[in-house]
Image 1: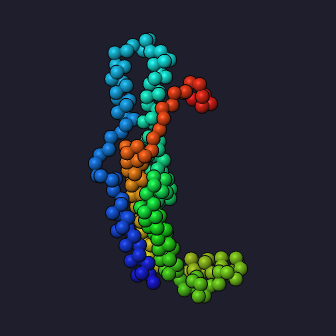
Image 2: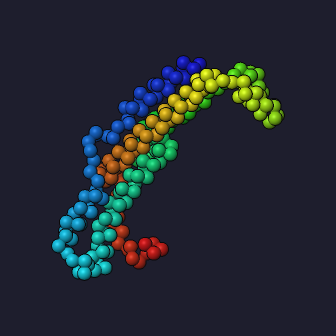
Image 3: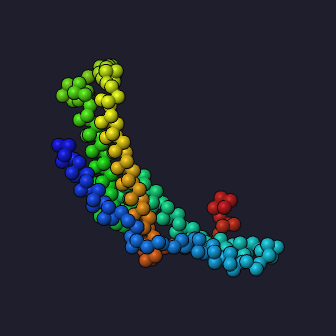
Length: 207
């Protein structure tokens, strides 16, 4: 049973790795940084005393789209970091989204199953009826097992937990990276668009 679970997790991880990289592999530009650089170059010869509110309004309007784009990429990445696959679903890639989601669930399930089979026999379902035993009985069984266990006895369980956490974090990281790449692709292809915001001084609760 454990071998099948581990084999399944490995298969999913191999599949996940095929989708994990930032699509295209190239270093992507930062539209917000480029727009800010362009604006600063244009305004390099303008004295501070000559800057008007109209100039500031124009500045904010020009950077509003790159700012929204950056926020969208960050939102997609954060969504997949919280729940692998969510950022992919947000960006219309259901296949890789389902793959990352399955990988995350398998990593968690594999960790739980591994920890369960490493528990002392008296704490497993065969000897301890968790559904019908009282809270005090369950607590007493766990207390007795903890008091009689040595550090060497606990090392395998600690190893499985640490490995499961590392695996889960790895899947989250690659899912977030992949989701950010998808978001950039959607922006560059025009699938996701943003309108300039021109009302910074008149709307938005004091913005």
